[in-house]
Length: 247
Image (cartoon, rainbow, N blue to C red; front, side):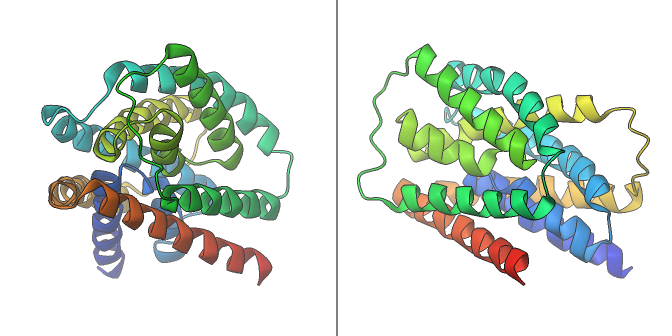
């Protein structure tokens, strides 16, 4: 019963992050699965992909109805990152976990600081395909190297590099997360991992419901406020991971 309650609580938090901020799902889901529910790192990563794929797809539908998804930009962004993510993921297997964790924390902190910079949000109204592809490839390499879905970096990239408004970046990020997470999940098929579906199922259900609440919350907040909230979440995650590495 305790495991079920924890799964429901953690799922709701992950859903709120994905629905409201357009990212942070895998950043929050993996530690929750390991430290709260007792999954091994390998099991947690795969389970996180299942949860994040399902939740992102559900949240995407709501943002799409409101016109907050830049479909062409998002598809170019996601497609360009698939191959670099696979190559970088293979290279990451040969590096110490502590090094990867520290790199993850540094990149998250830099992304958060960029989001807090005045004048970051400068929508251009038009995105060049080459620029979107290059940004997506870079993001794919970083996220593949660090072993995460990429939403926590996709939003800053979509806002700061491609010039999308914050609401459009949140919705488009969900498209990118859905595609990248699904691709990573397919790549992991047949690995023989035992997954505890009695915990994954309620976790996913709570996350989907939480994503709808997060989406409604994002409509009540101004883009700049949402941007600052996202940045603060990133800084908190980065700080906790650095503490864990240095402890």
